[in-house]
Length: 405
Picture 1 (cartoon, rainbow, N blue to C red):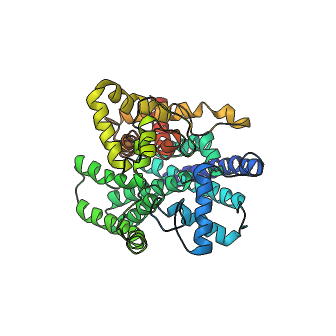
Picture 2: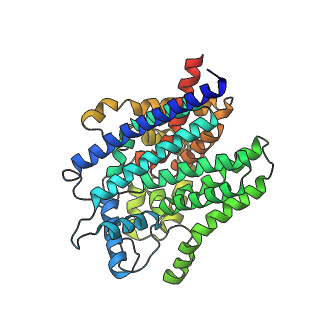
Picture 3: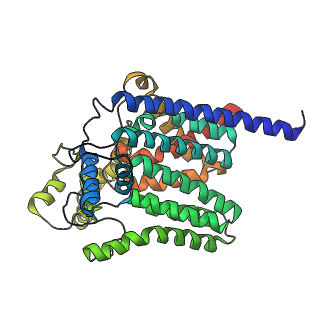
């Protein structure tokens, strides 16, 4: 068989394998959606419930206010607007409820697209073996399968982040300003869905500069920044008009920061899943801006008990974020529970060996920075979810390298 034909044949096999992986994921995820949407997941809880209230208020009264009947910028609008579009298309009742099944199926499709881009990233930076194995690990990862059930930001924000990384890699390799512009728009969409992704905009460029890949880097960064600004400008302009302040992201960043201050102290609360005595003191005594007080509390904690706070903001929060999956596993998904530890352990092993394994240095750099951000705020496995697809690429690369010897 000629070499060219052999290469095409191999590419065809990988495409077929990717199709099978995606179909397997869709079967499991949509089966879960159809089987559980009208039982334990029939009523929305927590943030999801408030998203629905916000969306209905926006559609009925034209007011965007999270937990408020007047306009605010408490929450970035990416996910509520995604929900609003679906509520408008599929319809909804005035009473609690909406097109939850339809949205969950759409989120499962978004998950499938995420798998596709994970394959593309893995294949581009290392090879098809890494790409297909990373997609497979993620496709059978129970939390990824079940995540579309939750009307929360994670599925959508993770998709935008993964596609941003793909287009950023292609832009830096091909010196393409168009790809840079697209990647900037994508990280903008990710930030509008989950604001903590903003810092990740800079990571690929800092990494490229460090390794000496500086050709046209400033130009590519400028196009990325333009794409980002184009997406963010309407939100900032709306905030100027609606609330009289050019809020770039959201006004609630102090909540997750303050909730993660107290070392190893968590208590169930009526509105927030985790908060310790520092958080309760601020809320009950009205001590003012949560972000400022949270930073002050962290500084005082390190001053009074430096070792305890150092351990909490490193090992403690890391363990709580990655130690268990975000959601529980029921039925046949329970048998796949160990996949979490395979992805996490091998993924972080990949981050360590990336010091010498250049193929996964970009993904590892993003994993490290994203995790560093995670350790600042309240440590919940839910907030670590967007990092897992990148860890799956690292894990796949470790497995492929081990196989090759």
